[in-house]
Image 1: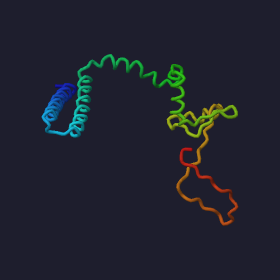
Image 2: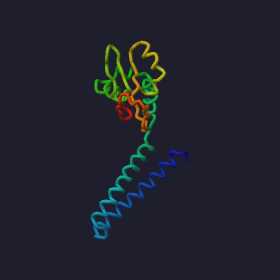
Image 3: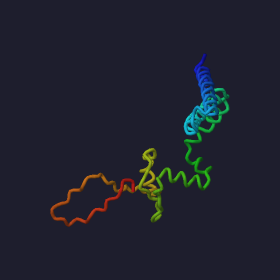
Image 4: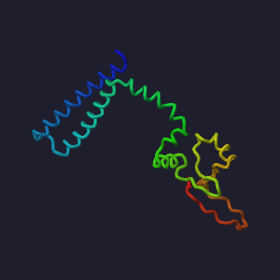
Length: 165
C-alpha cells in the first residue's frame, strides 16, 4: 500500500469516527443529556473537523494530473516579472507595488524613490541607481538607545521616528 493510499484510509477512518461523534452528540442533545451551549461548542468543533477530513479525502482520491500539468506549464511564468506585470490589472499592479515597496514609492525630480527595497532584488539595486530609475533612501531607524550628546549641546535636536518610516 503506497503512502497516498495509507493517508486516504486513515482519513476515511477518522471521517467515520467524527460522523459517529456528531450523531452521538445530536442524540444526546435530542434526549436532553447535554445543554444547548455544550452542544453548540462540540458541534462546531466536530463539523470543522468533518469538513477538513472530507476535503482531505477528496484531494487524496482526486486525479491531480491536470493540476500538476497546469502547475508545470505556469511555473516558469512566475519568474518572469515583466510577463506578470503586463498581464496584471491596474488593481493587481497597485498590489504588487505595495508588496514590493511597502507602499513607500514616490516620484521626485524624474526618479522613483523608495525607503524600502526587498532584499531579493538587492542585486539589481546598483543597476537601477546607475540608470537613474530608482533611488533607495535609507529610512531613519530608532535603535532604542539614547544618543550621546557632546558637552557643547549646540547640535540640532534629533527627531526620533519609528522603525520602517
